[in-house]
Length: 268
Ligand code: F6R
Image (cartoon, rainbow, N blue to C red; front, side, top):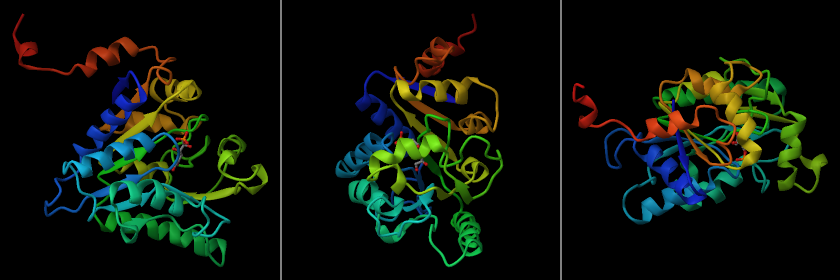
């Protein structure tokens, strides 16, 4: 795992964007880009940086396929707070990913079985395009990844989940009161997320410090779903000082972030 700590939110966004772009096939390559998308506040700066890269011809998402992490159950796709609409506004309109190339788990259906069947099909459709190359992630204050709440199976697949009370409280800011926040969602499973080629997680602020410490330095445990980052061979975690404030290994991360060059190969 690489832990990179930026000194301000713009630096965090830039570091995260660089780590997204460097793991995607070059625009124009015969391999189509497949990007995993998170909603929420954490990656907004990262999306702005990707938009800047497009405007400077360093990136092109016009043929990229985007797969969302999750969607609420119980609100229509057209609801302004549905993750489909949110991603159209906050990602498609910013980085030039076409709405027809945006795939979001289906949170509506005639029966619970139909919604779960669509969730199964979602994993199949990710696999059918060769898998997500880079998955963008935030983390909940309770350690959730996607909407895999504490207690989620570490190898879970895309499925229906009950939202934790803490998550509903945290997301009430986007709705007109907690009673309007859905109780359930469809989320990519932790096992699904772990299949992406690279994970890039962004977290900022003191409110994330405990979750980050538990995810990066605590035991691998369903009690902190974010701890599955420890299982991934190419996980990049980009933090500000506040989100990094409870990390015990901060000094090591800073030393390691400087990288290796030929001078380190000189035999002492
Ligand atoms: C978003 C998602 C969540 C958020 C997390 C952090 O699709 O699945 O895991 O990443 O709740 O949200 P913010 O960034 O708003 O603090």
